[in-house]
Length: 588
Image (cartoon, rainbow, N blue to C red; front, side):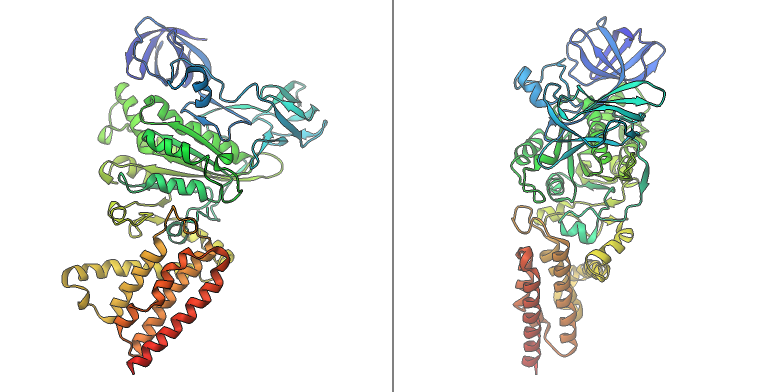
């Protein structure tokens, strides 16, 4: 192992000489305090090291020692419901050792090496196995069955395996490889964070990640295994939107990375998630969640690592055949960490001081998402969906991080400060947002929800676009200058905005809407528009059509419980027909 001495300290960057035998991305221990760092650049025998802990007080001449292994995470039972920092140190364990202050140089195992887990084999002695095959299971939480897989690069015959209680480092099975070497298998694997975990085959995105958020599912859907970005200015609801997605998305496992965001936002997550009841399982949401907390007041370099730590853990659960949703809040803070390290390395800056390789680093992160067939003979299908929040300064998405992200992701949920100020949440702007998955998901919606789903979606989008064009005229000359059909169009678009797109995250019914209910809501708004148009052609008065009492009932349809949807739908339709008929009678 390479040993050297410090020759320069510049914030989180430490330069050490005598490190010729070290490799790129090796983990090193810096100074007598044994701070954790990672080699990020080599020049001759000089290694540039980004240190994941506070470097105040370090001086030249102090020792640096390479561990000879890259920055890796421990993967095994015990990940779920744990809160880690950016380099997978469990914060609860650190608190037990050092109290409420994060002392430097603390060495803590990522998984509890003393806790016993009950292992149930799924193969017998003599079974031939290959990399990725499941050899047994551990009940990690009431919700998550942890599958123990043959590590990547190993195959052979199981010569010994037994059911029982084991720690993550004890041998649960013995594998005889094809060349006669015996390998001990335990419940834990290690994997370098900067290297994507392999899979057998990548599948095309053909099914949606259902979120229960109407503006997302109906207008701008994300596929399972897809990638999405939520850019928006401060206060526009990025964090609440990600909380909603974490709670309601149709995913088995949630990995939430608080990457450089405010400490109080992460505190909200830590306080809220354990108390939230998971609607899919009836258990605490933490029973299927991994949290990585690396807030803005924690070391900058660890912020850069936290993204990779989170996505490696997510890939591990994807390999078990689970659908995983990864939330990164926010990639802008991660990019700022890249910019700071790049500046200290004295690299040539790109646009706005960000390094020239910003785009390629973002792409390396997002391309690790996807829907895949995992390694192993059983052909398990898993999905990893990545949703990254972007916090552009002043909400200006022309800045480099937003633009680099938009070149990579296929879904753009653009949050709008003006909508947030009007208390319209989620404040996703329907005129600037888009989803490139819409066409590939159309077949799924038509088969599983309704044959005319895409037709209704198209009509809703046209109404909103027509409203935007008509608003210019209204601003100039007022609503009275519009023709009756255009006024009706404005009224229908208002119904779409206020009754369909506006959704209360804190209302017990409105917080989640099933696809069937979303379909019925779209039908009601569009039937009001179509039937009112017919009434208008038959001589009805636009003022009376705009003030029909049934519109209030359409607006309150969002608060109808799931088991009463179809009955209420029929009642609203009959009331609509009756009121429209009366409006015509009175006209005559």
